[in-house]
Length: 523
Image (cartoon, rainbow, N blue to C red):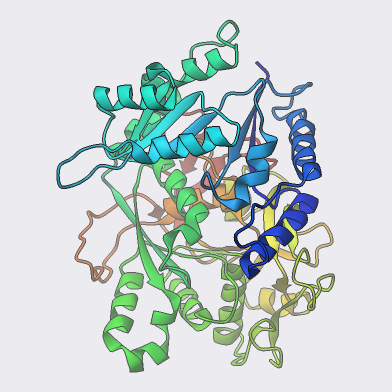
């Protein structure tokens, strides 16, 4: 088999489809369609089918020819108006439909209820689709009588009903599905049993077991403005998890609301301000993720300053990198009003400016998006070594503002190194403080390419650089064991990760890492 294509469907994937159907949704919300049946326009479903067929033949694993299986995720809830044209487009055929549904458990009596699943299957069948497999989400494994009831009323064979019950971490789910022979049910429906091989999950099993038995904690302070909703930083969280498991460390994330670090909070809510600073000072490392708008910016600047002055490992992503540049300009260069023109258009020290090719009037589609190439202009730096001493890396971007190229000489003369740039040399991509154990900022989003067995190089660098020291304990009362690995004689060292073929080496306390060739394929 040549590979699998993973395809996620939403109404925005196809621009034409999205715009046409969005107009229907907008009118429905305004009341134009109240009490009426919304008809699916035929050419919308044709466009969806054409798009799937076109994308499904694109090679995905470096080999010639299309993939054997196209995996389509049709998100949303059955019955929602947003999913109607996609349900209509995915008719019967060479098709295996896995329907994910909830089987809640009543806490009072502990009974598993099948009615939500029965109802959603009934609605799905009413729209022309019959599920081949039921994946039932529940707090515990389905009881046999519950599975028999679902099989009877949902017209799905009992052997095609699997339970996704609560496990220690999400990495157990593939093993859970294998143990219930979900792969055999899928292969049978797709008529691939004759060519498929037994799944080799040895490496995955080892990694899962390691992640469940880690004890040496690494505490990362996530300083952001959307900390009330952790899913806003889901990609960053997963990248931290991948890196921590690779470094054999147990990840603990402390959410620090950037605004709580600011002086205005100290006046209005002294206890909240103190708790935020206690969390920051109790962390082994600091991560400032991306974001938009000026709320919490001053708090992020204070976090970057704390990490820089106290030699605490720091990683700034997108806005986090821009924040680090602004803080350096204010504290080191003495530019007290240094700022981004995003937050202060009238600043006399514009360290971060709007990209010249962008549009300030049309927000849609004007960002610098997608995979872009970054060239290492300084080869003897932590970032280049983490990526395996390659000349360039391809990482994904999402931004409208950039470091002011006219101020680079001032920064570099003061000690801030711009080690990575784009092909023109004028767009800054990676910053480092050479004298700091680990102070890295990147304009791109390395978390988007991180995978469980292929963690992002820069996240691995952050976790490996972290060590316990005499910090203020966090206010939530957690006490962690001292960690001896991470930093040695002021140089970044690497701990040996799981045995998955990656080579992480250290010698004499300096960094010598072979990780990735920088082009999305890992050694």
